[in-house]
Length: 217
Image 1 (cartoon, rainbow, N blue to C red):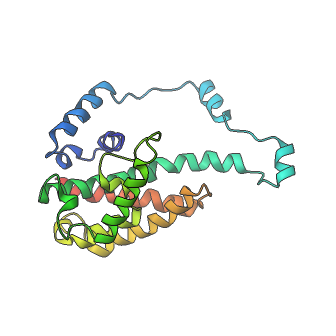
Image 2 (cartoon, helix red, strand yellow):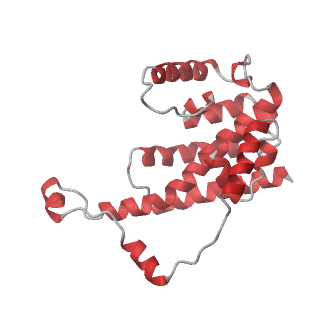
């Protein structure tokens, strides 16, 4: 739902994607009304104070354990790129789920030949293991949130007839998913992403938004 709200703020027609899920659509509308988009100008003094709120690590710890001198600065920089990755990945998941639900109904995940069997089995295994750890919150309400990022490319490829109206060609979306996954894996293991890769990730999200916006009109 957070991804839906962010997408709505970015002028993506989420209502069209969710048109067959009236419960989720109603919840989204209520949340959008409850959390209006307000632009607030922060006084210069407060902005300077915010910039100074960086996690600091004592020199003694850095020297003793051989930590990078710029560890805290890297953390601050990576915090700026994560929202782009979050929106990109969840936008893809919701688009895939929404389109296949429109085609096959709410039980599209279990329809024969829609999702490759290895992906289905992997998801079932993850859901089973999660069920053994009930103290921890669930990943999501649908099986698609238990897939690997790369699995989304396989699902799209397996159902290309349904997706070819959204993307210029299969390789276009595959390339963006494959290259984003490389960056995602670096971020997921809490390693710094080079600036050129950060810029590439932002560009891919911008490409995706523009493409979906064209298809929504």
